[in-house]
Image (cartoon, rainbow, N blue to C red; front, side):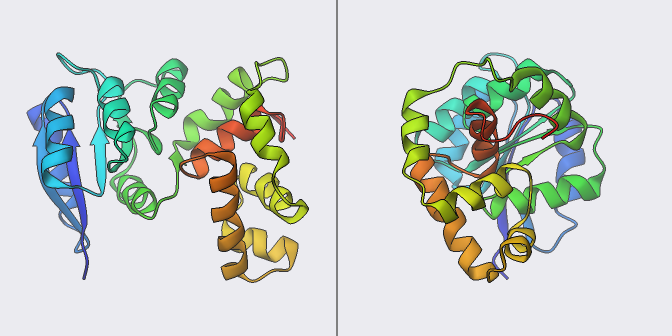
Length: 220
């Protein structure tokens, strides 16, 4: 079995110990390194080659958001933000920094384990408790649109645009396949092409871009 390699970045020893205990109970998960601050997390991400970094936000020295930006800038591992703070500004800063997911520390162990596996597969994930509120707050029709992103959006074929709309609404590949009467393999190919054309690293960034461009709207 190929294990998912994990790096834990949190300034509290007890939190890191608890996370390690939860994650290493799973046969497919392995903690390969721990860091107590952002700078060390960046260093270890380069040295140990993890698949996923579980990153706290508030740490001494370099914070988790800065560390995330540095890790993702080098096409490094995927980053899952794991924080106590249910703050919208942290969420959007994390996504802008390149994080693939955002989860609260009061999540269940099962939710955490599932999130790590989702992130490792290359998908994105947001904590259910924050998603709807953040979209309603920040993704409004009056937001500044990215001209470059809009140009990339225009390059999508009609079928790819359909897939993008369903993807942005939170549908899985299986659900998109069912609605559009396509095979899942075909949908997976379309999703990959959509992400490449719009310049999104993963599904989470695609969702954010879709709201910024008005492709989907809160409550729509």
